[in-house]
Length: 320
Image 1 (cartoon, one colour):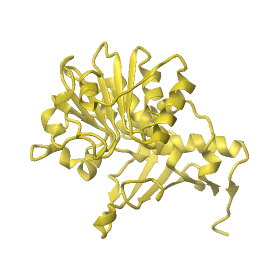
Image 2: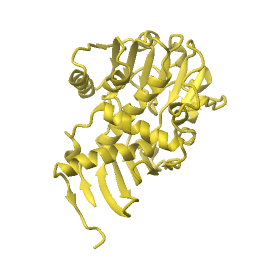
Image 3: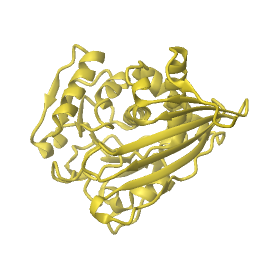
């Protein structure tokens, strides 16, 4: 089994278009009924003072014929200093273990890829502006991925409070789209009202909870499992999308806030052409994005194969 550390993967280059393609292929295989993705198992830990998170996911990607196990643990919600996530891949064609690897880079790539696919499929015709709220691990790659699928976007905005995350967002946008200017915003509500696409990947404290009713007509809000979205978003929107109904039931029920958890479409069906991305150009759309291991597996495989080809990591015979 190849063991790949965070530093082994840190500077590997996998383009946004390659990641988006791998993630879309993963969703399409699932939509065809070929892949498997049970609902994630999430367990709250006893000490509520730390708001710790622990969960695991199991799945099978039919395109690669790989099985994957992912685990995540984070102590507390205010920092990623004690956040540990791994993925283990097994090759079901050969029956051999393939890789055990740090999953932070994988998650930071497949998450904005999913955001980009939602935006491509569900943004109103003529959408010209996007706002990213949050500068954590899940957020810094988002704007380049959005521009990869929607190059017609004219204005990209960012709200964040972490200097390193803001600097990272600027650097990655400049790296992939050097001709684009980034508008930093302070008035979050005003920026939401002025943006056709709003991505929320932030905590509660840094800004007022984002209300879907602040969107302009035709606006799209994508929540990356964010605590920064106001409760009731699924009640107040015109059209609701989620990556997985099962995942929504684990991590997103507060978004109904006393109302019915109404899901109008799931992303795999939208990508497969079985459900519309929106019904009306003027609808305010809310999309809840929760990670699915069928997207982690192909992205992890892409990073692992590049790392192994470059001679990184080490091979461990666990079963000798």
